[in-house]
Image (cartoon, rainbow, N blue to C red; front, side, top):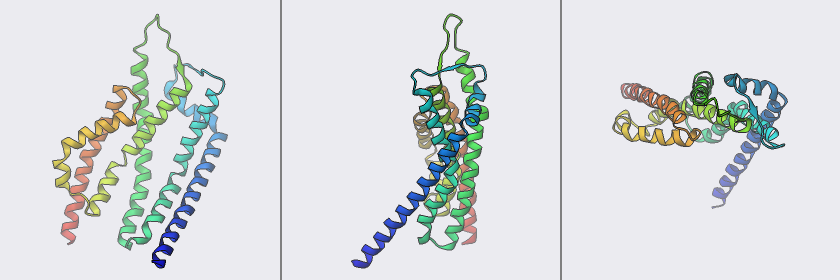
Length: 238
């Protein structure tokens, strides 16, 4: 009993240490981002080149800057966050599984970056163009900078997370938690789940939801193909 308690205390101490490290790097990334806020804001405003923004209260702009810096800080610290998560989880794994996790960690960061860039270069400009074209001559649009930054952040983070799907499916297949057959049988249910997730992750408009759901469905099909390849390879090795 005492040995189990010591083991539990050791795990909790290790968890506390990892949380402190992660919090420190997120804070450092946030401070760095705040000191470079003008550069980040220029990047955020680039897709909305013809729009003019307002802030509705004295604190709005400051709070928007803090939010931008925090989100940017989390993205900057993402490699450290993932590293510490796996350092906490991996001691109980074999060397083979550790190699898979390290490779998946690297691929995860690459896919997150690809998803974020895809959202920034394609999805956000299309969404802004669609909504601005709905304006009328007698109705002057006023855009809140705080709402715009929330809109941009949610779309970029949503696509970054969505592009993790193939990595997740690959790991689950590699660890024998799912099979390609199960994925194929569950395809219709998964598509419904995708639209629900898209509705939760994106701003409350149908266009953003569809623009997120469409790549998610393509990624699902890609994930099924990857799962089939990994599953067949595992059977050949056995």
